[in-house]
Length: 211
Ligand code: DC
Image (cartoon, rainbow, N blue to C red):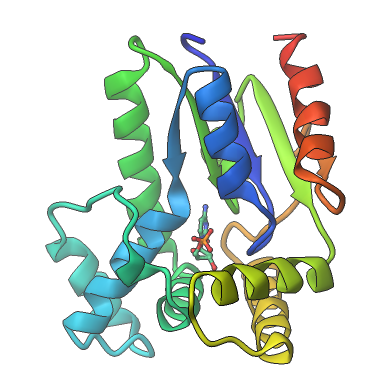
């Protein structure tokens, strides 16, 4: 689908990535995962030992970054980077930087294809005028169970109560922050992802028929 923008917002571990990938393939849209950009910045801060309690250090480092990869990697998928990404994402200077990268990327490629973009503020702040806005809703216990299973299946150690606690903490950080908190974007359709993946994509594919 050419020239359309679909936004997918929702809390941590709500299935945004799986849904985005599915839609990207089914409707031939380019997938842009904004969380990866926050995670990449978190990794840079970690490696360069930036003291994230000091705003001047954050601002200085952000100005120094010249290139960011949008590629997924196992290195940025761990709990340490998840927490750090959520903490640095509260700052306007970080958010402005990430948003500019997203606008530039979309502007450069918008004549070639449409986009499905997922994150925490995509339909509410970054692409307010998107053609279709979705908000993925799943209760924290189901999210924690799914994340736990994912980690165990991939051979990693995992403790369910710890995962649930971390998910609730990230929800709190993402929803209560002053800058671009996680909200249901105006005009977004709420997609219930508590049941099966088939149920979820059925709800979404019905909405695509009206585009
Ligand atoms: O979706 P994710 O778990 O990969 O995102 C990592 C963190 O980045 C998340 O806890 C909050 C932040 N983030 C954000 O603030 N805004 C976005 N659009 C995407 C991610």
